[in-house]
Image (cartoon, rainbow, N blue to C red; front, side, top):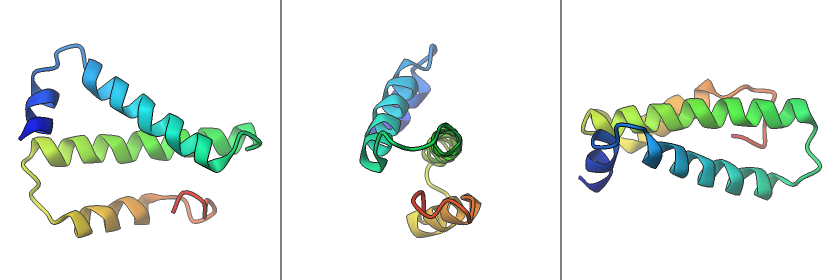
Length: 85
């Protein structure tokens, strides 16, 4: 309920931006700073897509299980990027 409220009442998408930036920063730090620029862009691409799917899932009142959602997100990740999966 809290996330639905924050996502719906956020006309400038500030909450989404801040949350996305936090998680992306955490993920990139965990992967290390020595990633090639192309790998970093691939990671950002997948983070953006995954975050968008998660937000939509929350706004739609979680119509599928979290396990199903996770499977969709994992299967959408590039098979060449094992660190993301």
